[in-house]
Length: 352
Image (cartoon, rainbow, N blue to C red; front, side):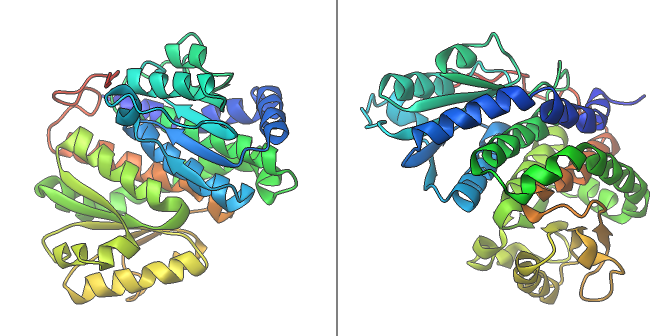
């Protein structure tokens, strides 16, 4: 029987199409408000999976808008009651359910303190939506599996469309209309790859730990796929920036620790190659997922999945996470677990 998680992963191209097409007017209106405000900085507040979408937002805002961006520390507001100077800032609150009390509280404080606030959520009637000046909808429909998949990619797509709208004239804007079709092609390629990745599935299913690695725009991809392995398979999977991995944790690499690397083409891919080589020298046999440069594999790029789509690197996180999500779902079932209802977890988590 097909899991709900697997069905919801399969809906991702249609969800992204809804954001790009149905959400175009909404996105343009909010982008205009951001341009008019001309924020001196941006702050992201989120938890869990949405926190990884927030890291992606940070890379996009700094990379394309050149606006310094940081991640909020919600407990300063909710526990310590620390007053902050929000004037002239952009605050983006991310929560699929829109119900996280700490995310809502920071958004309310930022709005009261003079920030321009945007809620990115799948629930238009949620507390987070009510707390913000503007609401950017994920348009993902109901997500029934506990592990977020389509709503995560929806957050990425909504953020990418917004930042592209603020930047204006960027090649992301030209790429967005073909993004749903590109993701459908990636989905087909990832599904075809899974049977050939049986050794990776078996290694993960038999292990209690794993390393998931990337850097730059795809750092959130590594973090999110590691989280999905934790949630659905109860594997101690650690997501790392390759730069941080080399500062010590590379000592964990070895033949007994499955390793997945998300490698984009270009300069970032070449930067990741050093990490792959160091891990291989320690006995690891990494599996690589990435772009056209991985085609053909070879000794230096072992067991690689080269994805179609020809997307600019800033949009590859929407594509690269798909094989990671499919992998996590497959490993969970191989371990005899229900990927739709991980032990000890609920769909909505409320933290203060």
